[in-house]
Length: 183
Image (cartoon, rainbow, N blue to C red):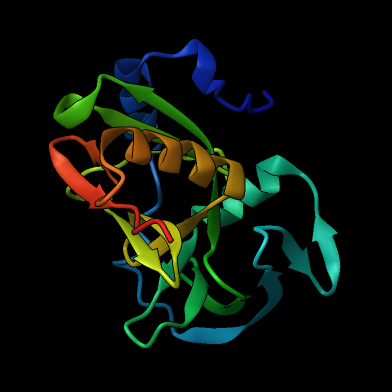
């Protein structure tokens, strides 16, 4: 049965949270494979996936591979199975947040993001938003981050500036995230 990507516009935050919790990812953090190699794969800064120079265009393949991603303490990225650990080049962040859905306002707001892998992440204590070089990133899991796509960042910045132009920030799940200072 083919996988259908979630349409955030048609979902409320409770439904998004349920979908995010329902994704059962393999326990890659606990696997310690002895075979180590190179996957000959690369995730470009724009979030596109490549294998041996050719773009991987099937969303189901990207979704499957993204569930096997792990980042080690040294910052290297790996595709991990119980038998193998294969290096994968990541130019920036392994994910891109491509869609934003919000509910509530002020301190009661919740921000849900859909990633280019179709994973769903709700910003909060376990999934903070942080600025790096004036670009916002969202923590996904286990040291893996998503860069916010430009339209998503603009939408988030508009919310932040509507609340306070001197210290633009947004709230999600009771946590305040700074979005930067306007120039």
